[in-house]
Picture: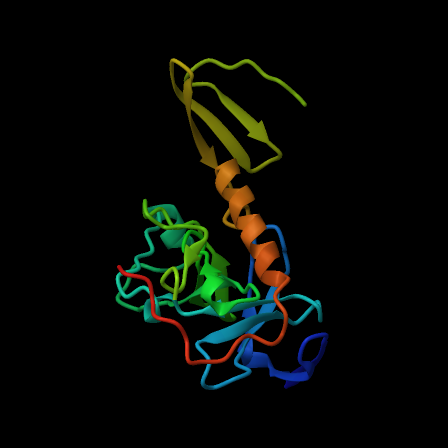
Length: 146
Length: 76
């Protein structure tokens, strides 16, 4: 089973049902309940979190640790329980990218990562608030002046 | 906007499944406990607004992202 999305950015997308991430709370301020992760360039560190409901809604994302090796996500107990975390399983974590005209100016939101956890009916993803004190909403990806 | 006066230890119920507990008042600071269902996230307003703005900015990104080689990462 697959579904088709006529993406305004990427044209026709065929998305396998098991590649659909359920977002029970949507994305903060954007809503949406179902997205998929799209890699359009195998050599790029950036992927796209693309809505399967709105063909115009897509956000560039990246895995934080390739840029911030010491990055930590700190969640309250209630939040961790909601996500079904707590065991040894390492969830898949992504951060949204503010992709400006110059790559040197790209920033990521370390304050509100997207955590993908195993749900009862396939993967569930939540955009959570990271309680770590130094998590910046607009953290530069690249060194200034580079 | 509805305004309700409560004392420490009293609660406010919103709908059937959201409960706010007034836990402590100290000067201009109020500590509030919140019980809400898992589907109802609770945010501090300023963080919610900042994340909303970043999500909207990310969603305005054009399809063509720059390709490597990428500049060096910031110092940790």
